[in-house]
Image 1 (tube, one colour):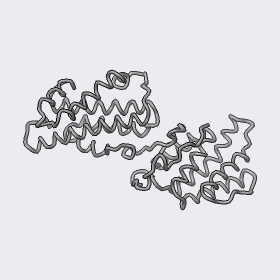
Image 2 (cartoon, helix red, strand yellow):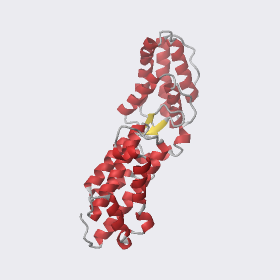
Image 3 (cartoon, one colour):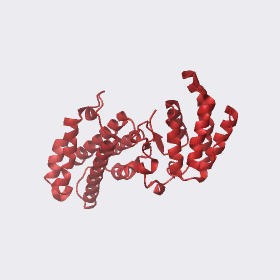
Image 4 (cartoon, one colour):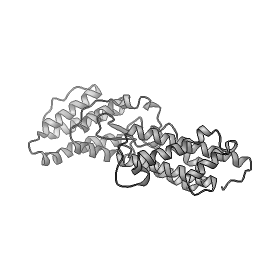
Length: 295
């Protein structure tokens, strides 16, 4: 069990500006509320099998009290599974008209009660296109499954900007985007970084007609008129070498897993995507000027 330390607004202070077009990012649906409120009481019986001494009615009463606290409702005075289940469902409906961050804090407290609840909630979120996922990490209890929210660089824009230049590059970035949906998992973070490195490698070698990134870097830095200032161009090889030397398992895809935090992963992915976007922009400018590029 983890303790509620970080409130949702502290993790996502600008959540109200997020779009709900692809995922539910700042609002809830009736269907989502209904699924949670009807499923969690039923899951208590699964928990009781693993914990024979569990007081189901008492636990359900505590769940009602958690929801009451975050909806500013009166605590229920009822007792008994059927009555408490009904109260829990009715109380949960109030989140439709309550600030989204209060719903998120309440759900986190409920997930803290048992790991079964956490897993069940994440499955419900996935079924209802909800934009967040519980991690079980007390320092970062929520991560977004919408990769464009956690990154400063819009990953969809990078895919579009590289598609006509190098389809292989765009495909690598699409794969990274899929991994970022599970960025709360260490393995997925590693895989997302690896895919971004592969995207950079394929782009540089394609644009320079070379077979390795070292020669691609050398040719690009020898031609600043085409590729821009050297201190920007050299960022690619710096990142490449750093991962080869410090995080060897990330680049080579072996079964070891580097200890890299969520924030570190997002930082590195942002840098790699920004670099790929920059080189792609230079390539497009060169193409406009009718230079002989391989796309």
